[in-house]
Every structure is written in C-alpha cells, then in structure tokens.
Length: 97
Figure 1 (cartoon, rainbow, N blue to C red):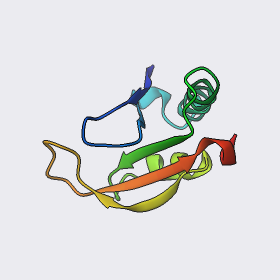
Figure 2 (cartoon, rainbow, N blue to C red):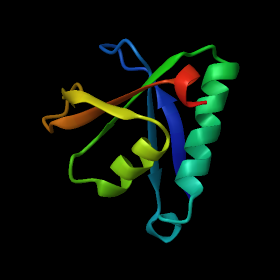
Figure 3 (cartoon, rainbow, N blue to C red):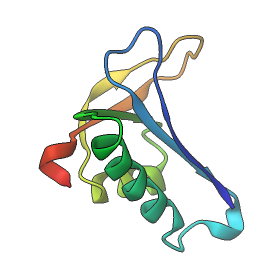
Figure 4 (cartoon, rainbow, N blue to C red):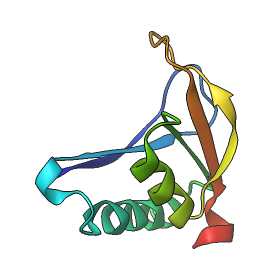
C-alpha cells in the first residue's frame, strides 16, 4: 500500500512526518488515516509536541493532506543532499489533536 513514518534529520530540530503510497492507494484516505494515527502516537507515546513536514510546491496531494492534518506552511527549505527547494510545513500537536 505505502508507508508513513517519522524521521529525525541531523540538521533539523523537529522530527518530520513523511509518507508515500502506491498509485492504486492514493486518494482513498489511507494516507490521512495513517498520518493522523502516527501523529497521535508521536504525541502520546513519544511525547513529541511539534512536527515538521516537507513537500514540493507542485505536490498538490501532499499539500492538501498536510493542511487537512493541521499543518501550515512555515517557509521554504532544502534538505541535506537535496537541491530541490521544498515547502516546510509545521504543526504543534497539542493544537491539532
């Protein structure tokens, strides 16, 4: 189906959520459900209070999903070993869960 997980990058303060799904499973709500449950676990089990997320400006599906989960755009960013400019999304878990 796909994957959804948390990543902590060496040069970033906040962990970030990432997801990828096979074409047959896009648009069926699986990513939203998996990401929402992961956010709850991050807050309740891991004690995290903030999460980031990164996506291309052209990835309308990811942008819509992140905004539906309560993330908002913080600015533009580049990840290590990646030349592409990405939108940096952020959320405070206590405000969205």
